[in-house]
Amino acid sequence: MVKIAVMGHGVVGSGVVEVFYKNRESIQKKADCQMDIAHILDLRDFPDSPYKEKFTKSFDDIINDDEVKIVVEVMGGVNPAYDFVKRCLLKGKSVATSNKELVATKGAELLKIAGETGTNFLFEASVGGGIPILRPLSQCLAANDIIEIDGILNGTTNYILTKMIKEQVAFSDALKNAQELGYAERDPSADIEGADACRKICILASLSYGKHVYPDEVYTEGITKISLTDVAYAESMNSVIKLIGRSKKLKNGKVTATVYPAIISKDCQLANVDDVYNAVCVKGDAIGDVVFYGKGAGKLPTASAVVADVIDCAKHIHARKLINWEDRSDDYVEEYKNDVLSKYIRMTSNDIESLKNSLKQQFNDIQFLTLKDADENEIAFTTGELMEKVIDEKLSAVADMGEIVSSIRILNI
Ligand code: HSE
Image (cartoon, rainbow, N blue to C red; front, top):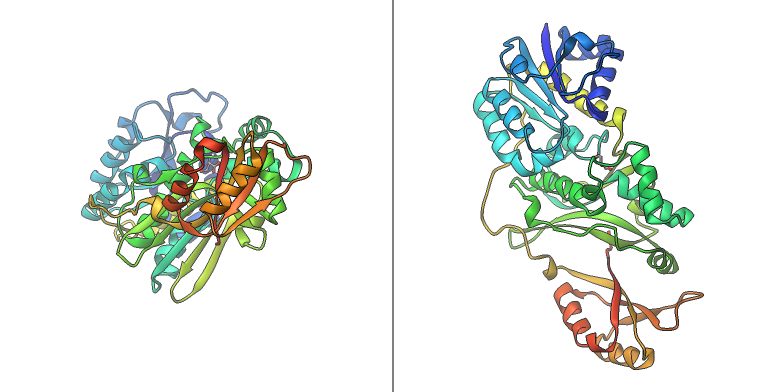
């Protein structure tokens, strides 16, 4: 009998227990062993739970139970999750987690400990919720050199942007709705300011390129400044605005890693990924483009990935299943302003004609956009492709002639 402990009984934790007991028979068959949940750690009381006798408020009950071989960490946050997970791995217990903040900030260290103690540290649910992405990246695509990853990695912001694009719903109402549906993080700023997607692109980049990319190295911008006017201008370009996590391997050995709202053509596969769905487009040198698509948030989709990791841990109790990357401290992540792209800019000015003339002098390749009912003191345009820092220099040259109210990068994915 393999005993499991589940740390955290929130949305994902309760989903893990539900999925485990609902499908226990087939899960045991797939794991080729008998399994049971011995402890559920949470500081809250759950007197009505059918599993109430399994609840504990003390981590000691888990760490001191030598029969517990697999620990599920679904508490979220770095503290105390980091300390608990580290102690479990050091004590020879494998860990399955959905905690992207933990993996993005401490992944290299925890993977190293797992390697040293012959345990497994698996985190399929940390990126894309229920979408199988980390296993395919590390196993099925192992023969490829990964060139680029582009993803819609946050369900909450994709839900909000979809509401804005398809129903012209205001940002705050759409956010409230996403929270009610259980998609948002406890602190929704992690979703709307891009931190959640940032953690996920860190994990994807670390796994794809073999070296840890840390969240503070990733230029991150959320969707709070996106307005319905920008959505309408994007529509006029036959495009949509999506929050894109992106990482590329460069010829100089470095990588790029960014998260920001981007205008993408409706012809791009990611443009049609709506609501809480996530999608990750991986470009490999042998396979070309592969797109992974599915529910990126929510109780049961995320639990589905966590329980799959538990099965994998059970099957590999005495054998390590390789998923790995190295730690590093060198100058590895390229400055985002060196990336070549074009930008959509919206400006206000009291003298639109003079501003337009100055912009034409700055940018050889500029397209002015039109919108029915646009404000007469407003101008919107797209630049040609240039290094981002060059675009910004050219815009600084006209700074005294108007004010930039929106600036959104345009990506060809
Ligand atoms: N808040 C996250 C999202 C949950 O909306 O995608 C899944 O990581």
